[in-house]
Length: 142
Image (tube, rainbow, N blue to C red; front, side):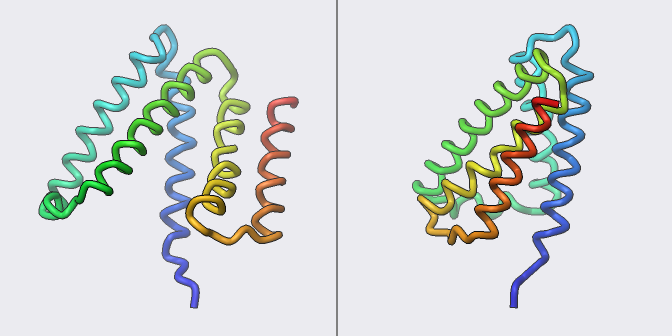
């Protein structure tokens, strides 16, 4: 049986990501986008350190091996580059098309997960990716 416990968390992620776009667009007015991104990362780091500390997650720190470190570092660099692009795009353009194009990451994940993680690419998944792509294009074109 499929475990569906990830769904509320994924929906929460989407809701908070929407708030990132709205709060980010408001907060970036008059600021350099790189500075805003750096400030955001400091705030996130502090918040996550508190959460990890309060939930006792630092006890597993020693179990992180070299391979895990490599991919965590690569993920962090990719995330930082994503934020830099996202906040500069928010500064330069309207919020809705920027957010829509950013969500094309779902399409990229589908393709990359099939290529590198061995996840199955079904007609449903491909159709969903096509609809996401079409939605992003329509949102940008208005």
